[in-house]
Length: 305
Length: 248
Image 1 (cartoon, rainbow over the protein chains, first blue to last red):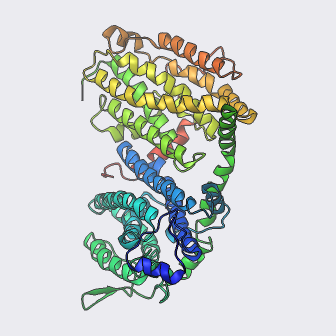
Image 2: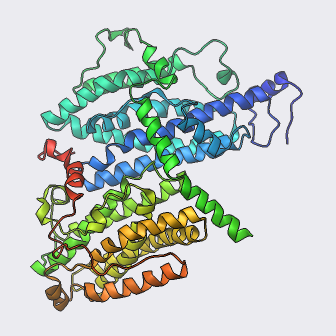
Image 3: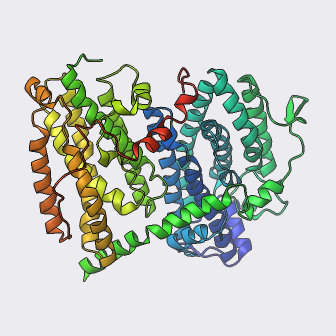
């Protein structure tokens, strides 16, 4: 187990490209903050899976149903991996993390506080939200100083890259499709554009510990700007209108109108448009299946006796 | 698409519709299992069953999605067990165990089929199904070793699911001809006997209290849909009917 005499020595270790491992005696402030970040990421994967599950039963084809099942399975799988990484930090067990989530005591990404109201919303999530999450995760992976998280991110990013391409293919079907499909996606874009832009968060504070400790490698506003540069021309090229009357191109750069951060803040208080239903569904199911976990624990205890 | 006799079409259709409905029902559990590992496992099983449905439908149509989703209810041949919602996990588990024990026998009856390619499909499906049975059997046996509440939940689900399970063996009207043609190598009645004997042996080994009903619900050679079918079909069709001419 490695130890550091104080935070300065630890930060020098990080500045030299050092990688922290679960068994290290890392400073408590680092442990707490990295844990909160991974817990947030894990919860977001979990609740993202629940956001996408609503439309799986209604998938307009059997292969499509398999594809969206596999994608959602990936998201739940990411949560599974991340919860193990978080639990290994010794702050909360996996069960405690999940129960905090289901009791509304912890947070998850803003976009998963919204409801997918049509099939096109499912595509908007795959195209817009997964791309935003991918950009954000890739920026964490680039320098990530916490070894277990970085290793898990490698797998997550490779799968999310696949999801992003899947989102592009699904969007192409709608953009090249019938009027019904085109109108459906435009309505979905109207609902999902701003939450996707807001996913990157407000501008990073000057003293962001996560940047200093090489968990994040890039400031929120830089990632958000790069996302807008890529997705505005893509969506316009597919024939859709970005729902931002103040959107403008200045010196080759796309600039959005002023971002209203109140919706994001509401989601961080679990007060988003679909927060209550989403959390309630998960919590109710967790309670309804408690007997399974208890029964399996009893079986293990009986077999061990 | 292979040209099949009307009798062969009926037999293949019944299995395809069962696989479709069970896959759709299993899929509804994504994200809601009792723990994450179970979510991942059951989701894989749902995907496998849907894959089997597609492979079987391809013997019947060139447009699987339209055929699978847009037929009138009266043209489906799914068993009520596969259509049942099973909104509680214990019901879903018992249904999964009963269905997959039966599915092994049904694929076995296709193993020597006279229909080109069907025996290869049966062999591939059986490789996947052996994992499904391991999964279901592991849960049943662990819960049998667990606490009283778990045992009671399983026994409660058995009371609902055993009659529906018997209904899996309601033969389609063309089964006798399909047997004569070599499409399948065993009758539903023969398979039902094997299935009932093996599931009874397991339930007795696990000491679950259960009673086999005298009769299954009357499905009239699978021509009558369960009371849950309309709701299920409405959900399955919800998007595709918005524009059936579209490529989704």
